[in-house]
Amino acid sequence: GAEYIDSYVFNKAEYIRFNSTVGKYVGYTEHGVKNAETWNKGSELAQELGELERYCKLNAAIDYSVALDKT
Image (tube, rainbow, N blue to C red):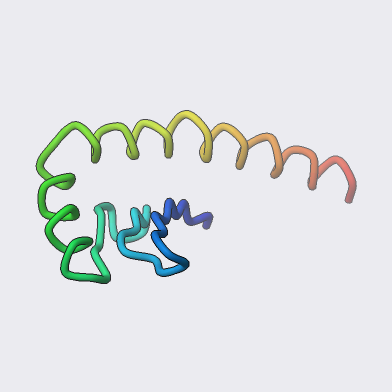
């Protein structure tokens, strides 16, 4: 299956990430952990899940179809 990851980076260091396999935000710094807790309770999580449905699943179906056509 496919995995959707949306990383947030500041000063070349990843501080928070949405991972579709985990289904929520995960923080990697003190600031990122605080943001992850807030974002997982708010509209940000719904937005990421919407992106997963809108972009990833649609494109996965198209890519799979194209791959089948080439075989």
